[in-house]
Image 1 (tube, rainbow over the protein chains, first blue to last red):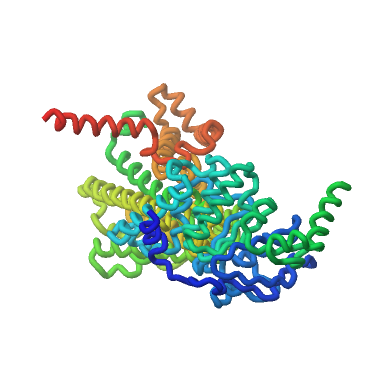
Image 2 (image 1 turned 30 degrees about the vertical axis):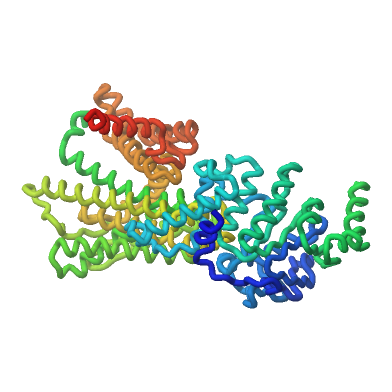
Length: 280
Length: 334
């Protein structure tokens, strides 16, 4: 299974980074202002091959903004982003995805009216080489490619236990399966770097535990580097090798889970928020 | 006109040809409004551009034998309309929803008004123009043959349009278009060049409408700006909405049913219920027809077929299964 899988899913994938210690993503002095609001200030991040890094911080700390900057949803005000040494500034989102970043969304964004199968198939689109004319005329190139996409998709779905659901309209799936489908769809773009935005949001403890295993497992299976936003401290502390803490757009701490846990600035940011909440 | 006049050949061929042309128009609009989720109100504009481009080409470049001119005029009509689709699509991409609808509505009206004021030696503004019959001359002896040839041609193009749209939708490109409809941000973030596909959809939709325009003008041999009123654009949109946004078979059904209903009311075909009723229906058709539309929209807001195709209905599946089992049964006995 593993060999077949590797051959098909990773078959035409140019290996972008393969040795530990190789830098996948680097941001320098990244900043984003919305009008007068400094959403992200001087954000520096270096992600190495197969690292699993957590990004945490109170609400509004700028975590999702960083994901949006990395995937080109909006341009940074300042700073640089490089993926495998190549600058991503000025690139459109779909180009960045084709270079090897994939992401999921805090509020799940599936193609709601499409089937589970087509949701994943849509993510293979940018690798498809059959032209519009090939598709209209149904030439052999098109048919072979469709068969290949179908096969790859089915394999991905079976990894996520979604194969039996493949004909269903995606909006009808239960919440946990929608999250899994979104990850499967992200993996279909064959990324080197996966950005997960609160993957455990809305999951119950047993689903969360399963998810943690799954994240670690796909990291190894697909040789991924993963950057993860999460509010569930159990998840972050449990699987991340390194954690970065944001507050009001600034990086206030970074290090291993145990280092971060003891950091007084982090405690203040979180306790401060809890104290404010208590007052409300 | 009485009910049995339907069986008149001229009457039937004329309306079957128009139904074919409206199916092409409605399907190409469904590609834009139904499958890709944009909203165009200017489809009559692309239709008019196709008709006028084909007409101008025939009027001013008629040096080749008829059949060749006919084919070339179709190509000219489709490509010029496609270019207009590109011209409208590119700047309008920054717009979405209502704003896109208004911009395309403006386009349709500008086109019509330009044609209304177009005066040359062969095109006469509001009176339009007349082209020579290319394939078969329009004489009393050839009229039946001509109608049959055009019916065959128009319906061949209807089938081609159906196949083109179906094959696009059921391909990687089609999935990109459908993904774009469901969630533009997510589509972009799984690597789909959403801008490119929006323009592409506009160009294909406009090109097919232009092809319908070129067929229309060749069939009628004369046309004028009144043929492309905004109301025609709205009727095409109605076919799409009532058939089901994103359903090919639904669109075809809607054109056939609604076109027939409209014409039956207009032409007093309900005269068989009594002459007075027929006349009354004809006088009140502009009230009765919209009422039918309102009732349809209230009872089935997703259109006749929704997003489904006829092949996906349980009844259809049972029927094909039944047919298949009957076909294989004798073999099984042997």
